[in-house]
Length: 280
Image 1 (spheres, rainbow, N blue to C red):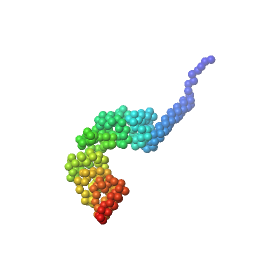
Image 2 (tube, rainbow, N blue to C red):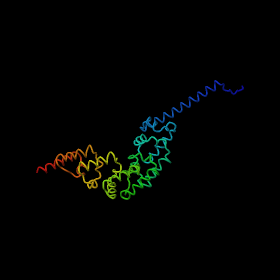
Image 3 (cartoon, helix red, strand yellow):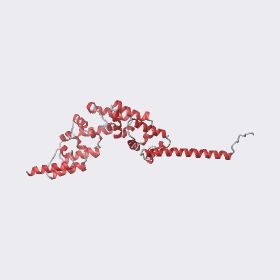
């Protein structure tokens, strides 16, 4: 029996091409579906992720796995991964060794955040993961160190959020605003070290309206701001104004800390106590 090699005819060749194309398309579709299912398992919005990171369409699933494994290796829980990756889907196609591990290295060895606290820094400020160590984190760290964030006042997992701030457009303008009020540089440094949140507040939406209200409506003394810089952390509309207006209505006054640090119930109790003293 003689076996003959069958040469595909043009029709047969077209059929093979169609079959191969269909198979390739089917395989691509299956791989893409697996990626979508993986994103959903992480609680990442696939539509949002694909819109913000088109490279996800062509990236192999192993790339996504390597990113999640990298983050998990630093102690970040699976429950937090989805929130982080949903915020910054560009991380899903990053190279852990060139893009992510250098950030961890900077936090560990330059900022000297203890390993167990790295996850706290990242969970508190996921933007750290998309900030370049050389052009963003290092300049901010050096500025903050000169400002006094060193030794016992060095940056911690609670304050590493400051590292994503622009020195030129965020940190310096806030220092200059406080200096412009008539405060001395050492006084501003002391305020910021006591209340690091001062460097995260908006000039337009926080500093300016609260300062204006304090100086013009409350006839405040800057000495009080120096003693209680946390004033800027309280809501102007929900707490500062209502409480000040109540005090004014009854001809009373309180120090800023006394007025703002307590709960509504405690504040009302103090208000009543002061009114009773006036009667007596």
